[in-house]
Image 1 (cartoon, helix red, strand yellow):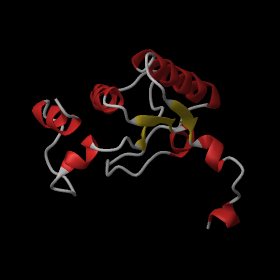
Image 2: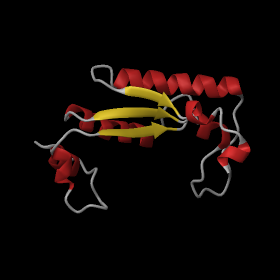
Image 3: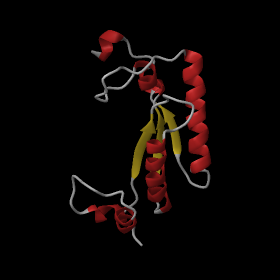
Image 4: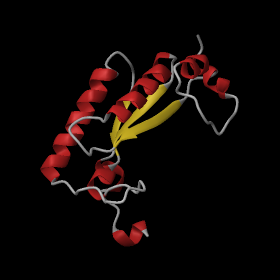
Length: 130
């Protein structure tokens, strides 16, 4: 079964930008997917998406797995009525490690890169960002 067939069969495909997702069956791609560390472990929704990523990996694609250390510090606009509770640095580090460990467990038999978006943003000043 091809990746596009498997994703469709498993119900991962509903609405797409590109009507023909069979492009996923051609050359391997490198892609990223990430989780913000808002708890010690992934949510059920995060885990379902991790399973989709695993299907990509099993079909030869390479994931860059992201832990959102920067977005975990400041929150993420998601349309909710309340803002995310800010965590202490210690709590956030514990959550980041928990998610990293889950990534390592889920994808242990496959090649992947693990990154933290905090590393991208930590040295950017306010004026430079604007």
